[in-house]
Image (cartoon, rainbow, N blue to C red):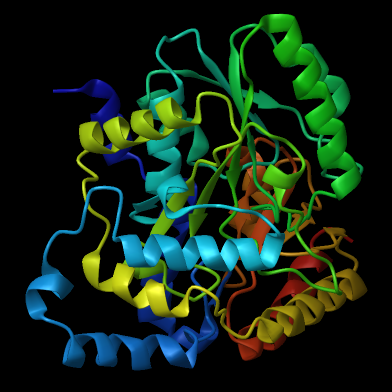
Length: 394
């Protein structure tokens, strides 16, 4: 058997491992006695139009169309609806043929990495802190995964380290903004600086260096901020998107890859994505939810609850003496561990029934991630436990 796959199957990601631990503790103590901040599972309901649309599609569409295959790239109606929505929002001119429907952002990323890389020497860079599964996705595509160390002052892009690392083997760089796990939204200034650097390197190396945008949190931004549309800043950008967070549909596995016509060799890149989807067996994204998205592509769930939770958690923890990165988007808080070893802190937190994710898997040491897509009551109830926990360090 494949030893690498055996290893991945026997050892879950740290996030999933802690999620399972939390479920076990809730079964023992009661759900209200355990403060689980592990999984980025949206706590707000899907937009009201989603359930109405599901019922409408089921009641008014031929069942062979609901449950049958669509074209491999996706249904034309849904791809046009998405293109129209993006064009309206970002002033672009995307066509349905620029879009490939997928089983969520994870499938989009796996397909894109497989489409862009051919040799083990091909490199994909991630900016720390980064989503833990990027490494698995890139290496499973047969390429090399490398990490740009974090800028611990801003948690934006560490350009000094990036310039050292980028080289002729660099095929792409993953940009995840709003960021999981830090909650930081990369500024337009930083993204323009990144674009200028990559354009310079493209000329130097004689081949494209793609930005691979992982942006499932695009709509979850606070304080009047917006997440810049990166294809408007850098030509060679591929977007991997999911409706998991914006419409609270993580279990439905529906998203897309956007390959704009403006990128170099766009038709070949798009065809390579089709080929990678075929090789992985991702031939057809869920048909029912393609039809649903066709009617709700321009909707989002009510994100105000996340802003409320952000304020409750950030203000509550900082008042107790914890140091936290101020989240501008997504629904994660990156908190500095009171001791150097975040794994030791995680274990101490468990004594108070607090479950948080240590930062080592995100490419940064000494922090923990808290997913605040939970009930506001969970946050309020957890603060006395956090108060007891920090006493161990005073």
